Amino acid sequence: MKFGYTIIYVSDVAKSIAFFETAFGFSKKFVDDSGTYGELDTGETTLSFAAHSLGESNLPHGYVAADSSDKPLGMEIAFVTDEIESAHQKAIAAGAIEIAAPKTKPWGQIVSYVRCPDGTLVELCTPIS
Image (tube, rainbow, N blue to C red):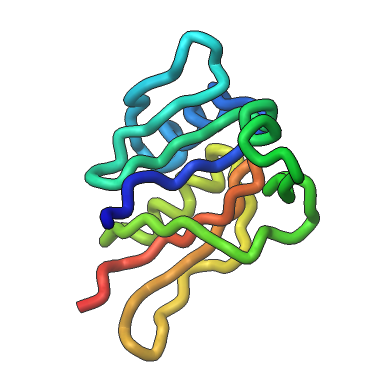
């Protein structure tokens, strides 16, 4: 078994990819011709976005859209960087909402949280040493 993808269902795949490019510096890897599925180049594990229409066809009993709640869903994706302060501010400048400012955890890791326009909760963190 190998962890291959995280797929986030969103209202607009192109907008989510553009946001993640601007806010976090990732590059677009692939978007299908229909625009309902796209991937970012994020390293070994792929971060993908799929349109709600695709999610509805894959999950016929429904799901909770990340942007449908005032509070973030009880899951997050995490990006590791040594530049927490600048990454946090860059995400906010691109349109993310600050959930928690950078804070040093008891184990020494610096962590912050932002919520993307598509509802995705993102943790920005330093590597754990």
